[in-house]
Length: 380
Ligand SMILES: Cc1ncc(COP(=O)(O)O)c(C=O)c1O
Image (tube, rainbow, N blue to C red; front, side):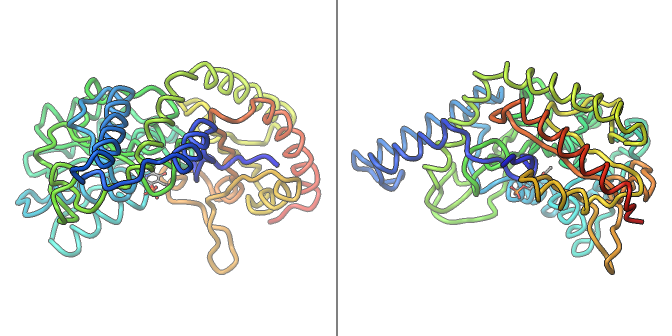
């Protein structure tokens, strides 16, 4: 079995698995806010985890807020910026995750804000000139991601931060797919709010981080009893937060694995293109995450390829959702002006740093066989 849907959710990293088993067997378990010795021990472990996360991500300890994941972080950042904000304009890109899009729509529909969607060029990169044209003193915030979940294409977030900082506009950067896949330095980035989810990096599902340049600007969504410096009430999910630190530490100490994976991905892509010249690699000429390939054979449904691969024990995904039994090109690909015959054919192959790079050889064989078989049938 080859699991190649890390951008969807990564399996637990081996160090995380070991840590969780040991912690469950040995404890201690206590409320981290309790004043007794066991509570203090749990609190110390949790705060130590916060320090590790902050160090790996180039943030200050106090800038890191534990939460349930990226969706919550995005929602809280929006709330912190938009609540009673007299400025009208929310600028997002056309390739944002629905967690961002739906927050922007919420403030648009319920509070009369205006949503501006930036252009994306054909290489899948958000248009900086369009941002410069739209940003003004009526702009409440900008939200543009660091790396796209479908394509793996990396966005110019440092330049975006610079434009936002110059215009004194808060910048929320959805770093969910970026963190843990490539080095990230929050302080150097100029970003105001960054987010992540544990399950994208081999930590536990249901935990994550919001990192805020100025934590005093964060408004509480869950009121509760003053936990997380009064920014997120409720007893902390401390064991899950420890796994964030373990996974990020693993990432930091195994960067060489990413390089090997990247080399194998590039080799895999050129082999498949050599064998099938019609094949399109989305964002081929753009900076991309080391372990994401978004590939299409025009004329063959992505779902047919996905089913073929699954029958060989290889788990990939396709974003071309069906409507009335017809595959529809995703909004991300539409924003890149990808044609429907390419858009309907995509499958996303996403590995992670714990994957064996040799998987690319097996995926090559299986994908070649699937393309050979399906091109004789032609799905549409
Ligand atoms: C880019 C991006 N942002 C946000 C999210 C939301 O993450 P979660 O569902 O863990 O809250 C995801 C998850 O797929 C994502 O890929």
